Image 1: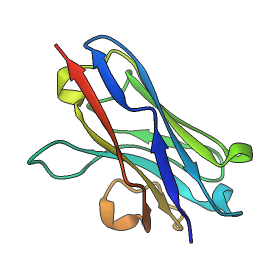
Image 2: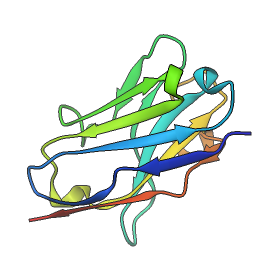
Image 3: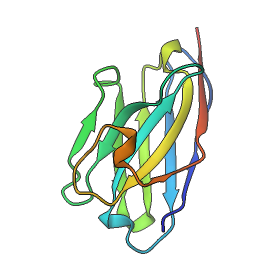
Image 4: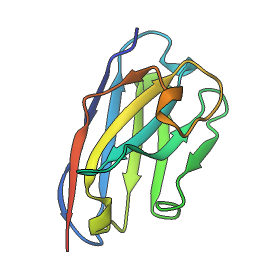
Length: 124
C-alpha cells in the first residue's frame, strides 16, 4: 500500500514557476513508476509526466515539454514536478500517481495509487 500526499500548488501569474512535490509512504517507493496527471474543471484527467523507478527514464506530454520536468529522489520518497513558463491553460488540480508496473504509462488505468491533488491556478 502506498499513500501519496501532494504539495506546492498555488496561484501564480502567467510566465511564473511552481514546484510540486509528492511525498510517498512505504519502503518500496523506489520500485514504483511515478507520474503526474492534471484535471481542469469539466475535463478528463490528463497525463502530464511520468518517471520510471529504475533508470529514471521520463516521459512528458507534448503540451508541457520544454516547460515541465519530472524528477524523483528515492532517498526522500518524493517525486517532483518543476513547472516553468506557466500558462493559464495549465490551471488544474494536479494529481500524483504510482504504479507497480514497469512501463511508463500515460493512462489513468495504469496507476494503482493516487494522491488527493493540489490546485494550481495560473492567472493571465
